Image 1: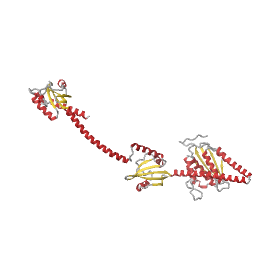
Image 2: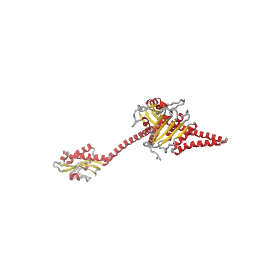
Image 3: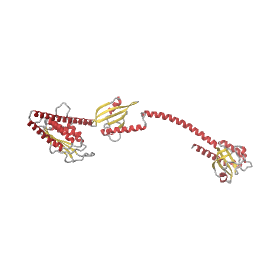
Length: 503
């Protein structure tokens, strides 16, 4: 591109000089004299020297030279064979030909007299050799500048690369991209809320779980953490630089367990990352574990009670009291047949069967009559009602009923279940002394009517929370003459949950 541009510029310059010379009056007038070369040669040489052209040749319409850089060639015919367009057609043009001085770029212009007749020609040229040398010189300068620019760029890129690698811990771009994708997947997979801020208190990252726990909608990036989370606690960690673990905090009617860890860089503390979880979820998990443990103890009690009866039966047989042994077997068989007939033939959900069997054993061990209503019927429960839900609901209500009849002469607890209609209904009743006027306080966390050194008052509260979680209703009725009835209504279908097929 540079070479082509230089050649075009030389051609245009040669043409402009030749045009200018062709209009000089002294040049035109010299053609009327007897010796035109005497006037034209000095003018042409002066112009050649001033403009830097290689030659300025002026000739008549026959191509005879009146000027030339070499005076010996004046009077000879012009060479190159490229004068016809100017002498015959009167054109102004640029040509490339080999003349007496060698290959050159030429600007050709006709010389016209006052009548407009062509009387001669001006040829101004630059040798191609000089043009090529100029091109080489230009390219060399460009090469030198480019070389140093490239060298500076290489050195700069090396230092820039080192700086970037230091900031990226030596990781390649694809490794950074993979880490970013993994980080996002992990953040959205964990059940804990995760929040990160810089040392100015601006949020740099928050996962979806944190937004749900804090009831935040939309983007929060680069927003101040104040008003969205207990910021004083985070600022304390930034100030002290010490991690904080398992700190219990209350925020917008929620109790959360928070862990905070400062983020360090070479300049000190860069920010803080906090992970937190709703304490209610942790309590529910602990309550479920507690109920499972109680359920296991009930099964052990049933086993223990059955073992005791076997020992009694063995003793009667060893003493020869066969009639009493038979009566005992028949009595136990009759009682178990009634209970088990309902449990295994009418209660078709194995989770409820297991809970009832455990409670039957516990009631038997405590000499409490546990009745299962013969009209009970239950198909397999839908999938959204889990074992942990049933343990918390049925386990707490049955245990509460068993405790309520400890002091009765004929302690009795009754259970009824049905799935007729759109709801699953569980009813647990007892013949205890009743609840009294404190019915409104019954489901408050920590409330208990019993005197005990151990923490109590959580069973019914947990049961109510589990019922509400399943979009159900729990009701309680207590008679002044004694006796309490708890009724639980659980919908068979919950929006967005697939149910099993009912038989």
